[in-house]
Length: 89
Image 1 (cartoon, rainbow, N blue to C red):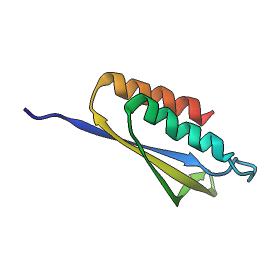
Image 2: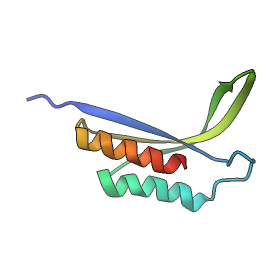
Image 3: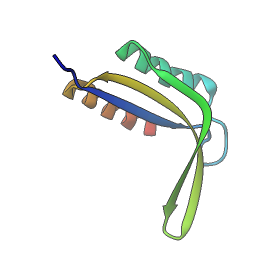
C-alpha cells in the first residue's frame, strides 16, 4: 500500500516592513502551532533571503523556514492555507 505525502514550507519574515525585528515569541508561536496541529515540524534558523519585485523596485526579505511533511489530504491543505493567510497579516 502506498501513501502520498505533502511537504509544506512556510517562510516567515524576520523583520517587519519598517525594519523592526519580529518578536522571537511570535516565531516560536508560529512553529508551535504547526507542531500542535501535525505533531512535528522542522524550523530552519539559517536566514533565507527572499527577493521580489514590485514595479521597478526589487525588495529583499530575511526569512526563516518551517517545514512539515504530512499525509496528503484536503483537510491538511485547507488548514495550511488558513494558517498562512493568518500569519501573512
